[in-house]
Structures are given as C-alpha cells and as structure tokens.
Length: 429
Ligand SMILES: Cc1ncc(COP(=O)(O)O)c(C=O)c1O
Image (cartoon, rainbow, N blue to C red; front, top):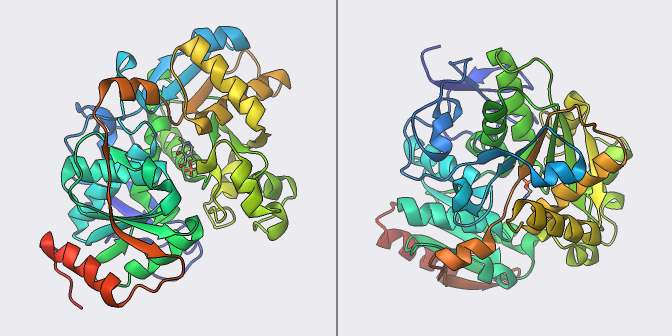
C-alpha cells in the first residue's frame, strides 16, 4: 500500500483510509485497527513516544519528549524472586528519564490523538474524564496550543492542572457524577466543529498506549511471557495485545502472545466478574451497588462502567487470545504493594499502578508465574511527589459550570461558541 497506514475493520474485513474515523462505515460492532505499511518496526531517532512514530497513525511529530521508560528491576525483582522483570514506567521520574509531567500513561494517548486530529483537520477535541485522562489532554493542549473542551465532574476539577499554562482548554465542570459529564460532553459534540475524542475506538489512543509494549519489548529484546496492568476501560490492555501482534508479525521478537494479567480494584471489578462468569457482556450483577462500590475503591480511575468488553477486538477478546487472567485487588493489598514498590524501586506510584503491582505479587504467591518467565510490568502512573518538587503547577480554571441534567442550549451553547470564536475556530451553526 502507498499510505503509511489504513484502518481495518475486524468485523467485515474492509480496509479504508483514515478520516479521524472512529467507527466502521458498514456499522460493524468492532474496534477498528490500524494496519501499517511497515511490518518491521523502524525506530525513529526522536525522543519520547515519537521514537515509535512508524507505528503511530500520524504523519508528523510533536516536540514533546515524554514517552515510556523501561528498565530492569533489581529491588522489586529480588523481593519477588523474579530475575527477569522489566518495568515500563510512565510518569515523572527524571533520574530514569521519565518525563510525563502529569504523571500518568494517559499522556501516551493524548499526544498522538491531538496530532492525528490536527492532521485530519477534524476540529476541536472533546474529552470527558474524571482525572488522569483530562489532565493529560490539558497538558497536550498546553504544549501544542490545540484547543480542547474537557468536561469533568465538579468534584474532580482539582485534578486538572498542567505544568505550563493552558490557555486553550475550555474546562466545563458538571455538578454531577462521571456519567453526567459523559452525557453533557456528548451534547457539546452536537456543535459542529467539536468532535468526540473517541475513547477506546480512537486508534491513536490505542497505538499511543501500545508504545509501552513496544518499549518494554525493544528494551528486553523479546516479547514478555506475561504482561501486568491495572484496567479501567481496558484500552491499554487492548493496545498491548495489538502491539504484541504487530511485534510478532515483525518476526524479530518472538512468536507467542504475552499472557495479559489484568487487575481491577475491589469492590468495583466488573470485568473480573464478567470474565469469571464467562459473559460476553457486562451486566448489572457484575456491578452490584455500583455507586457505593465506586466510592470505596482506592484507584477510582479504574471505575469505568462501560468498558469495551464484548465488542469485537475488545478486552474480552484480548484476554481470550492471550490466555490471560484477571485479578480483583483489595485497597489494603494495593496500598501495601505501593509501599513495597516505593521501598524497592524508590518512586511513588499512582494508586492504579499499585493495583497492578499487587496483582503481580499475587501471581507469584499463587505460582501463576515463575522465575524463569520474562515479565513486563506496566507502571501506568507515578512520580507525583517528584513532580511537585520540581515543576510548576497551574490549576485549570473552569470556563463553564453546569448543573447535572442541564441541556446544552441557550447561554451555555453561546458560551462555547464564543470560546471557539475567540480561538478563531470556525463553527458553522
Ligand atoms: C494511572 C492509570 N492506570 C491505569 C488506568 C486504566 O487505564 P484504562 O482505562 O485504559 O484501562 C488509568 C485510567 O485512567 C490510569 O489513570
């Protein structure tokens, strides 16, 4: 093919060019995938994520040097009796080269997403988030100037900060929960010129996250036998599976898919329950007392009620294809895993990453993995303390405050249109 990549639908098998396309034009219930012209991974001499630009759905690059950082664990590896443990760290840890200043792997999603949208000329991004994702997109906006509309529950607004000013973020706070923010965000996208970021359907987001598997594999020279990650939507896990398939097709790194070991935080563990019950869809009984359960987890970024579970090419398929496992982790186990990690590796973790470490400890205790296996631990966030010591912090101030259930009409609509007009973004109606 002449193009750098095409999109491919695993449902109907059709290939087609990318126009910031999120869904199969034939209406298949499947996650589109990128198919790159280069079957062999060609590394670029660029910092951060753009080292892997030949397997990202973008033509250019951003001048941002944040990317995943891989190293061989000594302290944690010794503690767990795992001599072949690679840690791939996303967060702020300058001593190791970790330069994600908002401290989570969501920056891996935000960078190629912002660039893909710019290259496709598709408009202004809208993101609904309760935390790390929103912050990562605010930072990408701050560093590139890309306008973004971020909708969050009012209670999560203090999580939105950047390390340089972000004049092109329109922050909308909704006086309600995450679902209210998602609903309002959807309405904002009715304004021509504003496009939904797309979540798991967005191939830039998945291929950006897939760089963790690329980095860990390149570092070790081979695909891992087992891969550990904490999941909320599971987008990162799908991305790891897809990246591993590309690396197998490349031919230089092994021929066996890594087993995916995916963890959630009790008491909110819908994917664990659906997997154990053998269900293709997540049902209400997988989320008993959802609201109360969500309030009790220590890693609330893992509490997604609508993960891409049963969709073709989704999390369930990734687990099945890789012979994977799921773990339900208590707050107590996550906290002590976080402490062990800080003691042995000398960096603090995001509570979600501590859940993944707890699952690794459990896998060792239960003999599910052994000392002869090569393990990749995806540390999805950390270094908040280090970042607070080194970096400036700019809170993102709300442009609009909305009540739960309030319609996107009248003054609210005019306010967003006015905000876009100030940035000379054309809105037709
Ligand atoms: C630090 C961290 N780890 C893990 C996850 C889970 O990622 P995903 O929603 O892609 O499964 C998140 C989600 O926000 C996160 O912020």
